Every structure is written in structure tokens, then in C-alpha cells.
Length: 214
Ligand code: 3PG
Image 1 (tube, protein in one colour):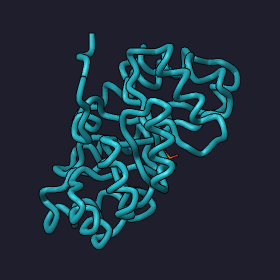
Image 2: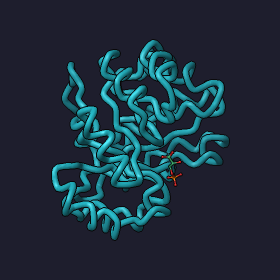
Image 3: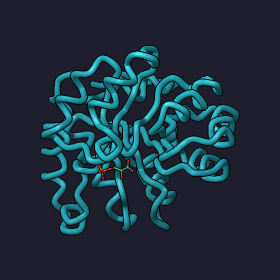
Image 4: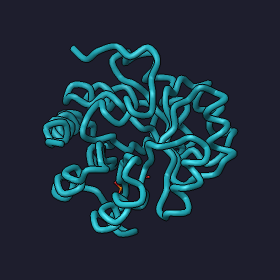
């Protein structure tokens, strides 16, 4: 039985499991069975991306019906995205890039954020605003493990969640790095599996991801 977390921090979001699933939902009816399937496989920190019209409704449905899940919002690009996500019940946020407006809005909302970065300057901007747990996006496209190794020198105090092009196959080499505590990826929730209601497959993918060592 997973521990209940009252006051969530960005670090707790990262440490809960080896993988944060990045989820794109096109149908509200998929939200609850999808969340139950991931939880059954041992993954409860769920990043629901704000990329579809139904994303906020999906968050509300999961919050209401799957209390074991911890719902977060991905693709936060503005302060108003952060406000809408928080109002829908999101307990953490993930952004594909970083602006101080987003960082400060999340702080005001008390919404733990994993800000997205892809360069040293973006890391420094996020650090200036007090963020030290960051998403590295798009990880494999922007330099993958080699870039993370390079950052471990000047940014040894920063922890990363590489996301973008990550898979069950390449996750172990990322998770083995000193500055990586978790990876993110969409491979746990394939759109075609959700469309045909193959929740058993999603549980299986979650189980494999949850078993990744770090
Ligand atoms: C994200 O938004 O973080 C990415 O779309 C996830 O990337 P992936 O689909 O390559 O896992």
C-alpha cells in the first residue's frame, strides 16, 4: 500500500516511481480506467497533458474516482494553465519549457512544478527562481545521456527527469546517471491501447516501468 502524501513536493513527485507517465487523453471515458490500470501496475504519479480539450475533465474524473492516483498536469505553458490545472485537482505540474511567470504562478498556487529545460541558461533561470528539480525536455533529441553527464559538473546539485524519446529500452542508461532520479514518457499509455480498452496492456507496461532499477 503506497504511502499517503499530504504535502507534495517536486522531489516527492520524482521519487515516487522510476517513471512518470506522460498521458494524452482524447476521451473522458478513458481517464478512470487508464488511471486504475497504471495504479494497478504500481505507478500512481500521473502527468495528464493539457494538450486536449478534455484534459481538465479527465483530471477531475480521476481525482473523483481514483483516490490512489496522484494527478498532475503536463504541458503547463502559462500562469492560467497552472490555475486551471490546480482548480481541476492537479497536485503537481510539469512544463515543457520555463518562464518565471509559470514558475512564480505555481509557487503562488502551491503547485509543485517540474520545469522543463534543455540548456544551461534555462537551468540557471529556473535555479534563480528556486527550482532545483527539473524536467529535461526533449531529452533524447537534445543530447540524452551525454548532455546529462556534461551538466553533472556545473549543475551537480540539480536533479533531472529526462522526458522525450525515452523508452523501456533506453531508460536504464538514463536512470543510472547520478543526476537522474526518474524518467518521463508516453510509452506506458499508447493511444491505440486506450482506444481499444486494453487496460491490461497498460497495467503490464506500468509494471515493467515500475520495476526499472534506479
Ligand atoms: C512530453 O511531453 O514530455 C513528451 O511528449 C513525451 O515524450 P515521448 O512521447 O517521446 O515519451
